[in-house]
Image (cartoon, rainbow, N blue to C red):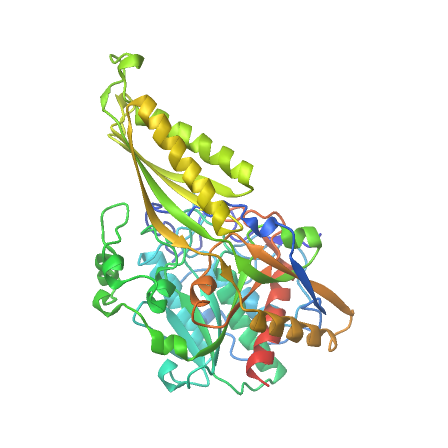
Amino acid sequence: MTPAYDGPASGDPASGSRADGGRADGGRADGGRASDGRAADGRASAAAPGAAGKPGAPAGAAGRSGNPTGAAGRSGSPAGAAGTPEGPGSAGVAGPSFHEMWRDLAPIGRHSGTGGYRRFAWTGADADCRAWFEAQARARGLAYEQDRNGNQWAWLGAASAADVAPGEAVVTGSHLDSVPDGGAFDGPLGVVSSFAALDELRRRGAEPAKPLAIVNFGDEEGARFGLACVGSRLSAGQLTVEAAHQLRDGDGMTLPQAMERAGHDPDAIGPDPDRLARIGAFVELHVEQGRALDLTGDPVGIASAIWPHGRWRFDFHGEANHAGTTRLADRRDPMLTYAATVLAARENAELAGALATFGKISVEPNGVNAIPSLVRGWLDSRAADQETLDTVVAAVERAAAERGARDGVDVRVTRESFTPVIEFGHALRDELAKILTHAADRRPGGAREVPVLGTGAGHDAGILSATVPTAMLFVRNPTGVSHSPAERAAEDDCIAGVTALADVLEGLACR
């Protein structure tokens, strides 16, 4: 089997990086093994990407001097260094640019103790990631801008979004933030691959006939303020300014306060329909958060849909009392009700073929010798269809209420966020399949089928799909593990993803 990137190596990150980022409160519970692992629902004929040519020196590659943060200051590529592949190099034509960027980005926000990433919105680690993105854009001569909601854009063929005609731009990208102690690939693989794909287009001599842009969406994971995809939701008008201003992190700091501290004007945030109207196609590359591609033996797949999913806060109100003097029969213990609710969530999800996860909890007064007065838990639930999801959540709420009545505990449930099923448009999805099929004719090795698969993980592409033609490419994850330091992707698969993305961008923007 092709060796996998470990992402960062063990031990401290390279000097100059911000290791701890910020608090781990509010991490999104996508459930490490998301439902990408279900059977593919269709296949399109295409080539195995990443097969052609020798590596070249990609035009405009940033090199070591392009890293503004001081991260990855080591020279060379010592074995096992952060982001360095384990084993022999890939034959992919887009490799050098990808490897340099991956090595430079890898130390930023990495926790030295856990090996996971803590790149939370509007923290120091986030600032370092943003500086890295801007440096990559400027090193390639791209026009750089940050929009009203803190999303970053790098433009080729336009000075800014304002210079682009409606429906003309072809955009790719993803996000750079992370869940608490997340993996190296979720988000950054898409951003790094986007710059590398642009380098590959230049190496090929492909001349875009349309403006191209690379985007880094802010706060996709929602790790700090508890709501996923804040940057794209604001731009798409799916999060009101008033609601955004009410978001707080685990320390009580509001989103506006965090933005101001980071130098961004919170009064500027809001819907950005003019910018989104300029986009004719958005293609997001992402590491697969499941094992569907591993099971089919394919390095790259095309997304069909995102499952409906949401977050619900369960508040269990009991009575604080002394742990050593209060008889069991006299207790109103909300922890018992919470524990029973967790079991009910698992049981009902299993029965329905859905997903349900209580991944975050807070307790008051949080003393080892005190019965809690309040237990607050957050449920993340996902299913293949709306009816199944509604059934599971209703069953969990019912079980919580019934157990609460037995325990003398008051249960209150609040839905904090919800995203309905996202069906990516067939027109753009079919165009991707056509482009990748055409690429097979230009490369040795013959054609092979590219899986079309659904996912239970949320993405910025899903948010934009309501107003913008949107598609996704997945890169194989050999274990399916995600939202974990153990997240992996093979080196050759990463380069195959870059090549596939370059093929797609060439097909959409250069013809």
